[in-house]
Length: 455
Length: 161
Image 1 (cartoon, rainbow over the protein chains, first blue to last red):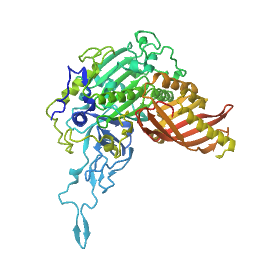
Image 2 (cartoon, one colour):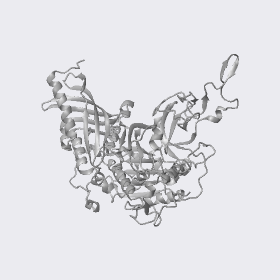
Image 3 (cartoon, rainbow over the protein chains, first blue to last red):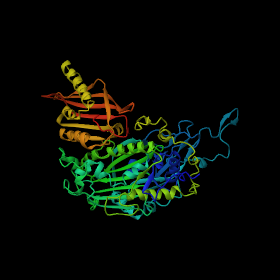
Image 4 (cartoon, one colour):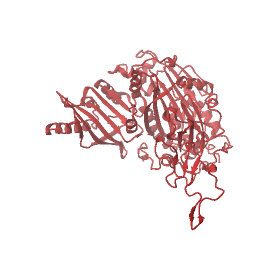
């Protein structure tokens, strides 16, 4: 059944049905088509697993996976589901191992996900006879963990369950690749730490939030007042050929200068920082002219450069109405101690408590509340017109329209994309079951008590 | 190493902890910076970063000026769904009394959040790691590091923990 059939798009993608955020069957179909087939998903930074044996547990969509570095330095990603009885065998979030062993029956796997040991495989010898054991034709080569295809560039690691996915560089496309390489140009990255938040909203809303240059100068009073992001800043909006990825490129204007944007009600002309160090911005050579580039890589990650603060933001869906948002802040190996201190201080602007980012999670939660109460309605994204095009200004919602143009193309295709022969793991049929989301990943009850008054 | 306090100092330390909790639960956010010395440090950090030696904090401020900027943000700029918060703070464990008389201590805390029309939920759980200075105005935090176990933040943290 085509679950997109019931959606009513008034025209193009400038009016977005609320049901794309509230329908659990659509969500299952999105996981299948965007996260598990045909796309690359972010799984981490090489700097998180620098040494042989290092691993990190993360997710692709709603499936728990492990990113691991083998003895020869190669990177591998495999699903955290034992080939024997299906147990989610890895509970540590990171660490260093010589092998992975499922505690249940001690099946052991190499750092690249191959099955290497099966206890009592050849049975036990009793009274001169061999009893039990695996069948003679049991071949460990056939029972490795489900492996994902891995691609790295500039220290960033992507993985895909779909081994037929196009090369990462083609997936990003030349326009977006240029901004990707601006940030990740091969320099060694230095991990500064994590922030994690669970946002009670549909995962696409976070993509849309960073494809929406309309709100930063309005919702984020901080940005307006200090000129970090204003509607009159020099700007450009760019997309890949499919309009699924985007870059919002902005150059900081003169802080405090009065202009049209000073008329917006959130502008506080009298606002002055007592501690100016929050905005102790030092230009770095690799920036070029732009002072901020926010890159959305569909479906799973956002790359942030806002002046001296750089981070990856990993989108981890959890059913249609929740997602986990994991921030990994980093710097570069050749940063001076002063630059590290500056990046850490500017991190106060971002994350779950940030001067400008805490607003976003709150706005997303309350948007989801609106969608849930009125699922037959639709959102409007018509600033700057109804079409999709790159612009040299920020007074437009064109990137959101572009994303939904791509969304419709993929979701409305009748044929299910072929599953790669290399990933035969039995996926649930589309729309078959409600998502277990974080409960499935974490093996516990998910935190739905805070779901915005819906409890 | 000295790790005991005379009764008056102990009582003052208990009073500081109780006053702090009362202030940050009162919605009078402007009370918050005065619990710190002029160059006092406040950090709110996930336990994961703390234990792995990563310097990133969810919030990090040094100096009362930066704390006042946060108060301004809470009152004037940070859009958020309003909520009550309620701190429950355990008795301090005095680790050390330094030669200048300042006190290195820790205490467990739990913060509950109650949104309007919502149920009360456990919001943020962790421990304070403090360095408390003796000043002419009484005991003040020279450093208050709140290391939280609740690494998965339920959307956002707006008010001081």
